[in-house]
Length: 465
Image 1: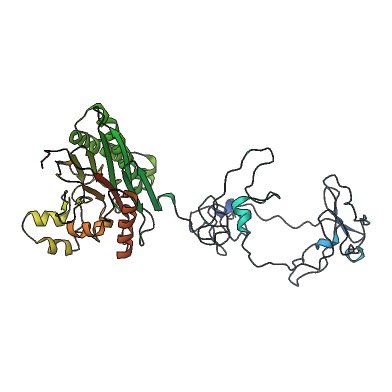
Image 2: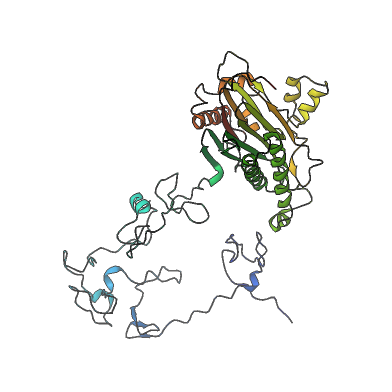
């Protein structure tokens, strides 16, 4: 009669490290076939001669002193029971050699204070277990001469600095992003991002409720063919119901930003450059649906990678905006006595209801369907319709480019203007940090991303477009 292969007695799955129960033939987490695990070898103790265990390799270890009463031996030896030797096998200075067959009790401890090259044998028996103790943060952060930390290599080559846990400030962070001391998960690179490029700056934060940041941005500055400066900001918000929304927003923001920074110096009109950048971002997001990583994750109830996009270009006297989705651009004048304005219209259910005259804006955005988007970048988008617009403000101010993680807490143009610091034009990074803090103070229910572009005083005679 055939029999099932005998299962190895293991407590954890060899493949995924998940705990196993007695009698499991397959891992409940990853499906690993436990019959493939080699059976535990039978105990075949080394022979005992004259009270000494003769182990392979010619090393004579003292016999275990006792048992715990359940068939498991107690610790084999304490620190004082074996003579110390150097790397060549010779006795350490100050420690007389002990007869190899002498029982453990016959090895007298060295006298207190005796020199043994940094090794002491006069300690009492150590406990079997030690409480978990945090390592010295100086060793973790700076390394040590004993080689326990990431200190400089003896050859003179500097070693790579190890990451220190943000929670306990002591433990080393492993390759999976967890502290080896307290187990705290470390912030990922995209949990909080800041960048300043010339006069434009952006900040993105995971928020207080989401497990990852699905927003991304790209900022930069360049020059037009006539030498006039131009600043660019792109902000993307991943669609959470889609597959890999964080990858979609990152790809779209990078490609759109690179497209704008390449087209503007060639003399392409900023509005045309914005339109082309949105199309390029769309192609980049569409390509993600064909990648093997997406194919593995894809399921019938999931959508292709998708995101929204909003961007702005500021040149001398001209402001160009472009968008697909529900991220927004606001205009906040330096003179707060003059009215601010919202420069984009959402591709959303609420905006459609308002445009059709079926609901007021307050009613539409109070509905649970308000944030259902009707336009996005992605392989499953119905039809891509990039929106672009040009403006010629007649006064200096600040352009706010943001995701709904911010404007949910400052929806109207006046509310946004009140949240923007008065010195945002001269301190854009500080201003962006303040706006992100405003959203976090309001609850931080979503990822928050904002970019600020100062708009300089226009040339004399410039009017509105």
